[in-house]
Amino acid sequence: MNFSSLKQITWYAVRPKQYITLFHKVLNKLTEKRHPSDEQVVAWCEAHALSTQECLEQLIGKPFTPSFSVEQAEEIQKAQARVDTCPARMGGGGDLELLYQLCNHLRARTVLETGVAYGWSSFAILSSLAKRGGTLISIDLPYPNLNAEDFVGCAIPEALKTHWMLKRGSDRSLLKKVIRSGPFDLCHYDSDKSYRGRMWAYPLLWNALKPDGLFLSDDVSDNRAFKDFCEELQQEPIIIRFKQATTTKYIGCLQKPL
Image (tube, rainbow, N blue to C red; front, side):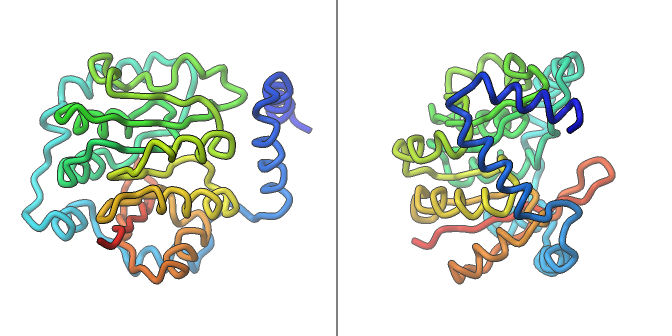
């Protein structure tokens, strides 16, 4: 056992409420092959893939114009400065323009997301919701070996936090309770990337959506979960190809029928 694993076990050991999370993490390790991505899933994603611009033009029905990066340019710089000085290294941001414009298009008032880290996606969503007095509910289990609890959401401007409800814990311990606050205009999944974790959470989030609402999941090329979920629903997805540094990532999007 390496030192990192020992630190994680110690972190969970003093948090009895997270024993169920530890149990499922161990089970995932024993039953699943995780990265690298399955080549067939990557090929499936690429066959469906659109750029952010193409996706927004298809869903919104008008020519694409960048807005989040323009409207929030100054706050984005300030957020990056906060992230750069954060002692805990966490996951990077997602497709912020996509999230912001989709929330605007839906005129969203209630959004649920799983996974926060620095809070880049939360920042984009909240920038839209604040215009309408809406609320973002976020579920986040901090990285267990980084002492990162105090830095979760550090990218979010203070002025937006009045519209933000952060629920600290795992999907397994909180999601069924949180969805009682629905239905939601948009649900964004970016937490447990295991096949089992996704297939447990996806139906809950889908059922918590309003008709015509949008379900998004990051990193859908990691395993077959999103593909299998689409086939179960008999729904044709939109896959967004997203470049993050030198890595190509894929975001899955489904719109709930009216």
